[in-house]
Length: 278
Image (cartoon, rainbow, N blue to C red; front, side):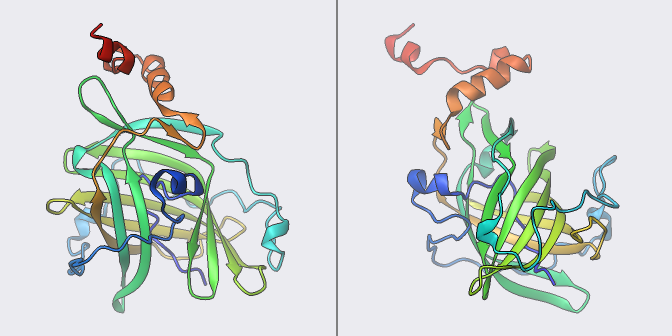
């Protein structure tokens, strides 16, 4: 059975980030002392579990690619090409920067269960003319989580911002999950997942999140009830503009995105023009 992991909003824990921030992909190795334990069930009020109007989990999803088969050597398969689609979206200033997570709490009918979920997340890359902070996202994106005796590769098929408010934002993440035995290198489980994540500020440099997760079989049929978990992340590095990532010129990409979406008034001035006083 899959261990359902809250993936988290606005992720950027990939191999390319190593050269920028010297961090392992999806394995947070930045230590942060005095992390306040998570406490309390974020789902006490049942009404808060309702998704925004017009938004819902799918009843079925497309099946897992025929390239992925149980007991097949993971190293022998061809993974989908990354970064075929991308977009930009604004994020709250309180969320911008490099954050670190230590664990997650699963909320089950048998009570709360704490589990290790170490990861570093980078939020925000460019700043518009009015000072708004924007984040770049592309998919498919392949990430890796190291667990006990196996590794879970998550192929992010779609990343959709749902809502953005001053003290809350929400996204929907659709993924294919592939569990690979660390000893044999063979695929031991396959499935798909849909996830809704909400994040809120919880004090200076602290953000809390709640996640709703639904699992599907490799045939695309529902195979789990909607699962709930909560996380807490702490700021370990303040926000700074990132102009290049994974070989992409983010400054130019951001400019073209704004122009193509009738947001020319938000295009930031060219740094060289600012330096020359033009």
